[in-house]
Image (cartoon, rainbow, N blue to C red; front, side, top):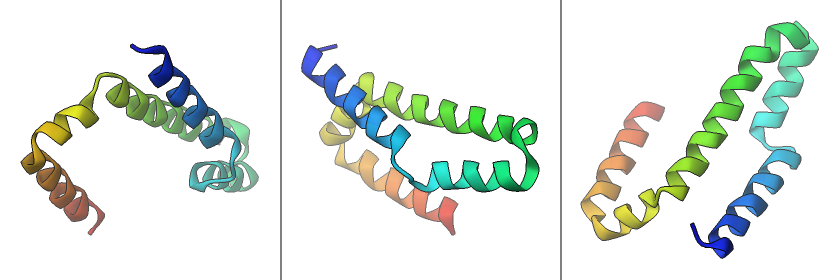
Length: 84
């Protein structure tokens, strides 16, 4: 992996970890309502999800989507159906 791409991913991870986004708010609420031990699995799931996103970026899935626009459309439709 190129050093510039690695530093960009590292900066994204740092900002995502320290800003009060939805994951941090969810963890704060869960910790306040259920305690640290019962919120531990939620924290593990959020960490694994973030690492999965970074691994997909590192392996070049974005480049593959740029090469195959139909794949992008399929992912948008599947994501929309999942949210519905």
